[in-house]
Length: 169
Image (cartoon, rainbow, N blue to C red; front, side, top):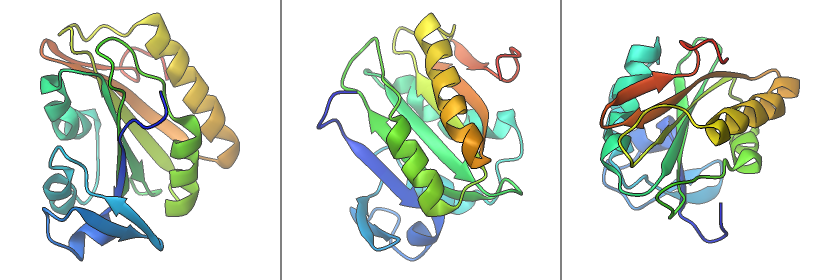
């Protein structure tokens, strides 16, 4: 991802303590910005992310984006939602996973699981070779921390593809 691309993270606790349309929130002493896509309302209504169907519903708005956007939801050991990060690449056809930022969020939130999703503006939800490599890279970075990459969803107008369902995780 190029430097300067939009980065957003919000924790569920912060969202519950603020207005759903707030611009700036506090996360563990740091000022962060509420995601632009309306994640705040979704996070407030979601206690747990029980399965890939719920994850697919959560990330469905990504299908309408014109450039690649990735989102990460951070979960505790019981799959309760702790927070979420949104990253906008600014490119229509590629996205570099912000591994360092995701790992920092995992540590900050004391997460035990992560679900990643990103869109394919082309409309085709088939994972690319770059998607597969990014998934392996993030899973390898999280593993020594005792954190599982629970799924990586590719979201497009044609549907959602789950790496877990394909046996790739």
